[in-house]
Image (cartoon, rainbow, N blue to C red; front, side):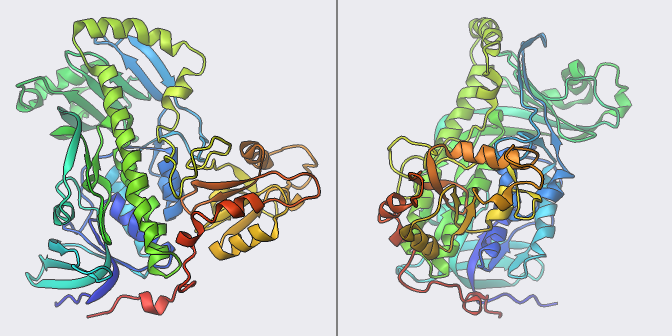
Length: 556
């Protein structure tokens, strides 16, 4: 059977991992078709990432799979730091079922199940095509600005070679990225690499261990343990200098390593799914973009696992870029908007990687002297009020000041930070997550009437306005008191503080705020005046609406 490929597509996504599949889906939800090319015909069958936080869970909401993902995930209780004898040094709880972003703060899962969920979800978007069994051989950025990108690939099923043109290419093709090489980008080390042994085991009997993440802070044999699912468990053991993985992977030695967590469990109940050695790297690419060729996920950055943010960083890339690229491709924004992708995400990724490397060094680094100091200091720190919340709060830093992340002025809500997501009542009183009410694009939260200038800006951005002062949003029978879901409305109003309105980007980052007016006045003239800096980039003078016919892929 001959497989046909389009001759030209709006966006070609190279790689069908969580980052690539999320990017393609988000583009489709913003009205832009995409073709996803991947070597594999099905998800890689063994888990890699096993954790995501409530912020990344919120991105899955934007993708449209958060409800289905709930059935696959297991909330984690937090983290315990233990010494080499497994004595608890500190306990950092993360057991809030509704964190800042509306979901559990720590979620354990099986990556192949997540990838299958993302693949199944793509079928709901006819404008996204996924082709497996494809080896991309070259990606050629255009010599002239505005010309399409040339993508050559081989169909492993037929052996035939093909070439297509794309208005944009997203390189989501992993640590050994061909797309990264095609734009002359290189990875730079932010910390020394470490070699670890990863062990995945299935056991139908629950292990007699605390149901959270265990971090063994022992320089002789640093280790991590976590329960991934109902019957799935993972261990990670740092390899010593000169030590080979084979020295630890025969069954007798392996059972000795995991014995502190499996006491009383019959050996024949412990089924080893895999053992694999990994080099955990802390790296970031020096260039994330050439024209309309972009790097996302592991192609752009590699994060040590100590704060569980490796896969999540790629999902944040997709969420940051998809709405910007869609807005440019549909003629609603200028090309300059794409410059903000690397400016925002590279700084953010570098800080996250340095945080992960630093946390790893604090928890597992040094020699015997460092271990003694750690054993003395960590218990004292854990006893400080609010320590758990501080350490295990969202590790994602705010975006630094820039053209789409506000100025350097202080204020609240601070531009560049993420809006919280409580449940608030719809106009009929039904409690809904905030993002479900805000839709896909820009949004304005308002506690005061809008000025004509702010009305005009809202119209130019196609922003949805949510009036929090609307009495129809009070729950029936609630009166003036906050009850049930309406407590979320009050929490959102408190977060807004002295602002009369807050303008949110499609990725729910605060773009700008308007001061609360005096009684009887409207708000927003100050926000509209400040918009002169960034509105020309977001509100192109060209086409203002997408033409689906113009965006549809040509079929070969």
